[in-house]
Image (tube, rainbow, N blue to C red; front, side):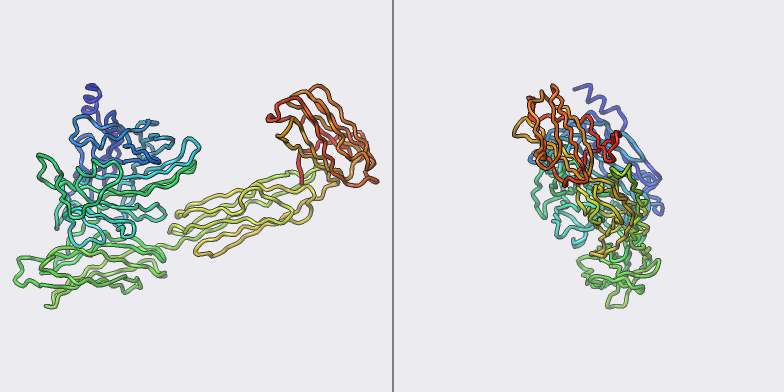
Amino acid sequence: MILSLFLSLILNPISIENQFIQIRVNPGPYEEARFGLDTTQGNPEEPNDDGKKLIYGAKMPWSSFAIIKIDEKTFIFGGPSRSDRKNSFANLPTGKKISEPYIEDEKIISIWEFSGVEISQILSFEKGYSTNLKDAMGISYIAKSTDEKEHSVGITLILDTMLGENDGAPLRAEGAQGLIESEICFEKSELPEFWQAWDTEDQATIKAEGRLKIKNKENPRKLVLANWGKLAKTNWDIECQPGASFVRDGEFEDEKDTAVAIIWDSIIVNNKTQEFHTTYGIADAPAPPECKPLSAYISGKPFEIGSNEEKSFFGNWTTDKDYPVQPKEATLKVYSDDGLKVINPEKAINLQEYPNGYHSFKIFNPGINKNNATYTLKIESPEGFECTTTNKVKISKPANLEMKLMQKPTISSISGIRHDPTKFYASLTIENSGESNSEKGSIEIQTSQKLSISSDLKIDFDSIPPKGKKTFSWLVSIAPESSGSASLNWILNHKNEERTSKKIEFDIPSLNQHMRIKSIQRNFSNSLVTAVKMKPFSTFWGQWELPGKCLFAGNGGIEKHGYTVETKCHENIVEVLISGNGDELPPLVGLFRVFHSGNHEKNWNRIKNCININKTSECQTLEEIWE
């Protein structure tokens, strides 16, 4: 244990960095997979935020981590805590390590297994929502079942915010009035789109931003802003105490230590993966306009907005306390001359109570047909003081789903006995040529009666990203009696039941005869039942290998209709010979039942079968298919 502790002190973290941020991950053995985040250059427009912390952590990060709940059991992701930590993380157990942290494609990946569920922690560079630069850390937990059972999986992510040297970094969030100075919780119904942490209350040089509502991702159930000591001791349920201090409980604690808990509801996970995702990184940090005594500026601003999409941002204000005239009240408003709609566009401000602060606004794009649009934030007081600032947003082209059809199948006939192929895959690819994520939708296949599909005809799909594509396949069977024109028709449903369809048509050649065989498993006795459908033919001969000794073989019950039937047992082989004049005999189905001494749960093997339809000695192989 002493050696492990020593190694944890001298090893270096695993890290990736770009010109904006550095992501660091603890390699273990203690506190493995916990992570930290620092700036490198940070915001290119802010020279004073270079090389600063955004998440608390010494050389080896340890205080930001995930709690995993599998069914009714709770674990901590990664390695166990060091024994000298003041906070013990409620002594949560760890899982089974599948992979040590490793770097792949500018991502740091750690994989652990917990009670039949494999979870991958993936930390990566992502574009910031308000900067459009790769200055945010994407935090993903991807879960899948490893034991072929369904499991309930929930995640609580704890981020120990630290902006520069300020471990009690001031926090902001949509729905809060002013600076958040004590514990606050947001349930799912009031969950903010984003939250921020600053190094100082105003005139900040280091600003960070976390995003919660990310399109086509599972939204968290709850956001808790509290002191780190409380969150670090949680097992799973976090009791919300609005107004509780950001100062940690403890004998030597007297300073604020802010932290954030992001909680996702438990969802069902099977062999299909489920993802929990959020981002945390640099917020845009423009300097306030030089307006006196009131200034207004935008932060958390959207860089682009799609059609019928809603985005949030902060409208900030500051006052110059040294100005000779101090306004007591003001109005903060947002408007757009380019057609963007502002939801609740005005906010009355009591400047005596909140001389500096912020208010969250929402803008909506009703479908503007242009490349860019602007919106303006304005603050004005009854005395006539005012200040405005304008932000330009890119209008994303809406998603455009295009259907790419498979090549038309070519069906031929082999000696007039069977089709070639008898089965084929009907494939369709959907591509998104737009600039926005598509809505969820479904693709449905329709076939003519001459074709059959055993799987679901309708397949639901999640959002398709810009330039992305998804391919869907169905196994199509051709009925032996089918001939003539056939078709496949695909229907694409998305955008609130908007329907698009595409179709291909092809020909199926007719067959000269319609004889088919089908072996049937009967579990109630040691028997093999084979159905043979005749029309027309001269002879049929077949052999099957049984899982035990052949005891008795019936004649199928068709001799009375003029057919000549001979069945023979040869040890574990049964042989069936049928002959007759196909021009005179009716089409029938014979059921040949064979009793044997083997295990009825084991399969038998069809060794060979052949048919002669032209009254010659030529034997043509017949596949085991049925209409």
